[in-house]
Image (tube, rainbow, N blue to C red; front, side, top):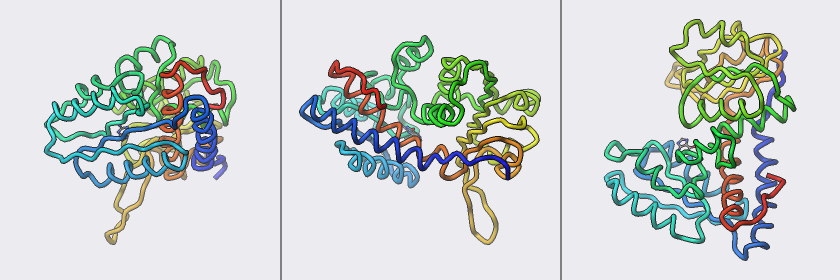
Length: 295
Ligand code: GUN
């Protein structure tokens, strides 16, 4: 392996430290601590684990965590009524409705009901639109975390060729917008892209968020490129055992890239750290306080 490992876990830990300091400054300015409400519908085990980690991270950063767990039979109107109650609650600065939602509920309708000023996931069309036109926005946590890792590693990204593999509203599209705002030349590729290998070979920056285990091969990577792997895929390794792999064939890519994020321990830990950061950013903005420069 020649590539350096990008240690997302360490970076996320530092960011969480800065968020804790910023939360304490907010407390001084506002007379209360920032609050994050997380709503989980149903009992999906993976979602349950995420929600628990979010609550714990919130408390560790000196913030208030409000958790609502609803049965998987909850109907859309009741969920939207809860969102509206949280919109109206002055002690709630951020609202996150854990996805996926059960089939009887339309994700889009629920996201649309969240006050854009409290939309710490950055999923509301108002925030997506603001990001696209270069206005202040709450930005989705995972792509913002990827950008932080890239800038920490590479400094100024101006003029670099970036390929984002994946076109989801949660990662691919906002990631492309963020890289464009950094003056990269951005290509959004996806599972249907013709000759994906050739497209990826042009890139100084590769962000893989396609959700297919080890799809991006080492010989697709331009020597010296920086590779950010957003994928978290559980695969069978025989004898009833499983392991987590990314969307990039890690060992192959690490032999060619200059730096690469591992799975686990790369992008994953950044998501919660950025969620906490977005909550403090939202809290300050809602109260008309100046931005906290440390975030
Ligand atoms: N489910 C998986 N990741 C996320 C996320 O970042 N936000 C929400 N709301 N749900 C998710």
